[in-house]
Image (cartoon, rainbow, N blue to C red; front, side, top):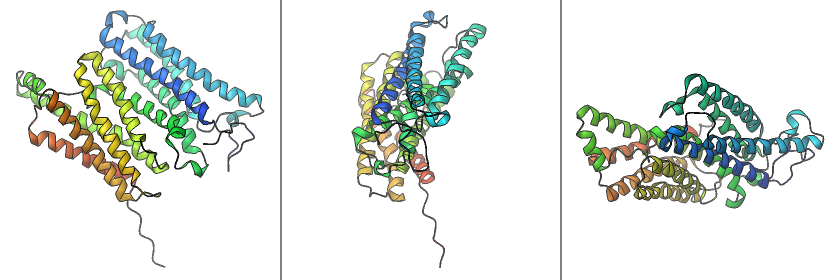
Length: 363
């Protein structure tokens, strides 16, 4: 990625400055502060509900401080370009227009959230994940942390299409943060922390009757398929733009897995659940290996194979870990079938992202 970031450093067809790697890295590290603040606030909602009767809590302080720091940094980048003579949109680094919009969206969501809590009280459980003001905050956070990703995506320098891992790190962290925000707001449907198919859980649900048992089973099946979609979307998007360096998918899946495992430990303090991290790590390594075998211009069949194999490995290892830790409570038809179904979902997504080549008209 180019290291030029002044208004005089024009790109083909653009008069916009480019943020260099170090600036993008600072942006996403500050974005991680914002994200960790959100996860800590989620932990507090689960463990310390009695301290959340007001908007003004230490957890909100950490969260909003992350926002303030990230917003201040983006404003600094823009103001520096203004001092160098750029005006209007030309002062905003390429890709960072999303971050500017995110700053305003988040600010509006923060004010709205304070008013919401004053009028309607503090949300509980899933209410907090579906509150309109919280979804406005989510939209703002997504736009902010995606700024480095969009900066790399819009960079017209074609020599950056096959980046090295170190140079690509801000983009990978940006994609990871975006995925993790979505994971957090869908924690009630996250397949790796919704383990209702372990033998003790199945016995507990069956003791409550066939209807309850069936609902728990179907809920977990849906969670697995939903998680498959969220995990694959960023990967399938990125392979359309870059030749990913080895370790990219492992980093995204692994870091997201650590964050969601930490959140799961907040509600169920069982350290053995950390063994389930083997699942995203294994799937990430397999995906990286498959991508490493691709030519400079990946063929559609290679992307389809990636879409099918990655979720099969992910959930296959997941079920193996659950079986070793707790015993698998589902029948072989259920756990093997949903694993295969996740592969079909991944194949369908890869087919949408990389359709077969259109036939050339005969001359």
